[in-house]
Image (cartoon, rainbow, N blue to C red; front, side, top):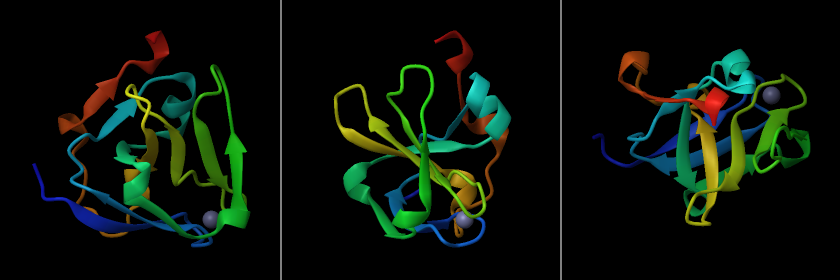
Length: 120
Ligand SMILES: [Zn+2]
Protein backbone atom coordinates (compact mmCIF):
# COMPACT_ATOMS: atom_id res chain seq x y z
CA UNK A 1 0.00 0.00 0.00
CA UNK A 2 1.28 3.44 -0.85
CA UNK A 3 1.30 6.25 1.64
CA UNK A 4 -1.56 8.67 1.78
CA UNK A 5 -0.80 11.79 -0.22
CA UNK A 6 -2.63 14.85 -1.48
CA UNK A 7 -2.92 14.68 -5.26
CA UNK A 8 -3.77 17.49 -7.67
CA UNK A 9 -6.42 16.67 -10.22
CA UNK A 10 -8.11 18.43 -13.08
CA UNK A 11 -10.29 17.93 -16.12
CA UNK A 12 -8.69 18.12 -19.57
CA UNK A 13 -9.07 21.86 -20.14
CA UNK A 14 -8.18 22.77 -16.54
CA UNK A 15 -11.39 24.63 -15.76
CA UNK A 16 -12.14 22.08 -13.02
CA UNK A 17 -9.35 21.59 -10.47
CA UNK A 18 -9.36 19.68 -7.22
CA UNK A 19 -7.18 18.07 -4.58
CA UNK A 20 -7.81 14.64 -3.07
CA UNK A 21 -5.94 12.95 -0.23
CA UNK A 22 -5.74 9.18 -0.65
CA UNK A 23 -3.40 6.20 -0.50
CA UNK A 24 -4.85 4.94 -3.82
CA UNK A 25 -5.37 1.52 -2.24
CA UNK A 26 -8.92 1.04 -3.52
CA UNK A 27 -8.56 1.72 -7.21
CA UNK A 28 -10.99 -0.05 -9.47
CA UNK A 29 -12.85 -0.02 -12.71
CA UNK A 30 -16.40 -1.05 -13.54
CA UNK A 31 -18.16 -2.81 -16.40
CA UNK A 32 -21.55 -1.08 -16.14
CA UNK A 33 -23.06 0.50 -19.24
CA UNK A 34 -21.65 3.91 -18.36
CA UNK A 35 -18.20 3.10 -16.91
CA UNK A 36 -17.49 0.69 -19.78
CA UNK A 37 -17.88 3.61 -22.17
CA UNK A 38 -15.95 6.02 -19.99
CA UNK A 39 -13.01 3.76 -19.15
CA UNK A 40 -12.19 5.58 -15.94
CA UNK A 41 -10.36 4.27 -12.90
CA UNK A 42 -12.07 5.10 -9.64
CA UNK A 43 -10.75 5.76 -6.16
CA UNK A 44 -13.22 6.55 -3.39
CA UNK A 45 -12.20 9.24 -0.91
CA UNK A 46 -14.20 10.65 2.00
CA UNK A 47 -15.74 13.98 1.02
CA UNK A 48 -13.67 15.61 3.78
CA UNK A 49 -10.48 14.57 1.93
CA UNK A 50 -11.62 16.17 -1.33
CA UNK A 51 -11.52 19.88 -2.17
CA UNK A 52 -12.87 21.43 -5.32
CA UNK A 53 -10.39 24.22 -6.06
CA UNK A 54 -12.04 25.73 -9.10
CA UNK A 55 -14.64 25.13 -11.76
CA UNK A 56 -17.84 24.72 -9.73
CA UNK A 57 -19.70 26.73 -12.38
CA UNK A 58 -18.32 24.54 -15.17
CA UNK A 59 -19.62 21.26 -13.73
CA UNK A 60 -22.66 19.60 -15.28
CA UNK A 61 -24.31 16.67 -13.48
CA UNK A 62 -25.36 13.37 -15.03
CA UNK A 63 -27.63 10.82 -13.35
CA UNK A 64 -28.82 7.39 -14.47
CA UNK A 65 -30.21 4.11 -13.13
CA UNK A 66 -30.86 4.68 -9.39
CA UNK A 67 -29.74 8.34 -9.61
CA UNK A 68 -27.76 7.89 -6.40
CA UNK A 69 -24.44 8.94 -7.89
CA UNK A 70 -23.87 12.53 -8.92
CA UNK A 71 -21.55 12.29 -11.90
CA UNK A 72 -19.89 15.63 -12.58
CA UNK A 73 -18.67 16.60 -16.03
CA UNK A 74 -16.77 19.65 -17.21
CA UNK A 75 -19.01 21.45 -19.69
CA UNK A 76 -15.96 22.83 -21.50
CA UNK A 77 -14.02 19.63 -22.25
CA UNK A 78 -16.51 16.85 -21.40
CA UNK A 79 -14.28 15.02 -18.93
CA UNK A 80 -15.68 13.57 -15.70
CA UNK A 81 -13.06 14.26 -13.04
CA UNK A 82 -15.17 12.97 -10.13
CA UNK A 83 -18.58 11.86 -8.90
CA UNK A 84 -20.26 12.38 -5.56
CA UNK A 85 -22.19 9.77 -3.64
CA UNK A 86 -22.69 8.05 -0.31
CA UNK A 87 -20.80 4.94 0.78
CA UNK A 88 -22.39 1.84 2.36
CA UNK A 89 -22.04 3.36 5.84
CA UNK A 90 -23.78 6.56 4.76
CA UNK A 91 -20.62 8.64 4.56
CA UNK A 92 -20.35 11.39 1.94
CA UNK A 93 -17.90 10.07 -0.61
CA UNK A 94 -16.23 11.38 -3.73
CA UNK A 95 -15.30 8.92 -6.45
CA UNK A 96 -12.19 10.41 -8.01
CA UNK A 97 -11.19 9.68 -11.61
CA UNK A 98 -7.60 8.54 -11.05
CA UNK A 99 -6.84 9.28 -14.70
CA UNK A 100 -7.40 12.97 -13.88
CA UNK A 101 -4.75 13.08 -11.12
CA UNK A 102 -1.76 15.04 -12.35
CA UNK A 103 0.84 13.52 -10.06
CA UNK A 104 -0.37 9.95 -9.47
CA UNK A 105 1.88 7.02 -10.41
CA UNK A 106 0.98 5.04 -13.56
CA UNK A 107 -1.83 2.56 -12.93
CA UNK A 108 -1.37 -1.14 -13.66
CA UNK A 109 -4.90 -2.16 -14.62
CA UNK A 110 -4.16 -5.83 -13.87
CA UNK A 111 -3.74 -5.02 -10.16
CA UNK A 112 -6.91 -2.97 -9.59
CA UNK A 113 -10.32 -4.17 -8.45
CA UNK A 114 -12.96 -4.93 -11.08
CA UNK A 115 -16.46 -3.94 -10.02
CA UNK A 116 -19.17 -5.99 -11.74
CA UNK A 117 -21.53 -3.04 -12.06
CA UNK A 118 -23.22 -4.58 -15.09
CA UNK A 119 -24.75 -7.26 -12.85
CA UNK A 120 -25.25 -5.21 -9.72
ZN1 LIG B 1 -12.61 20.91 -18.64
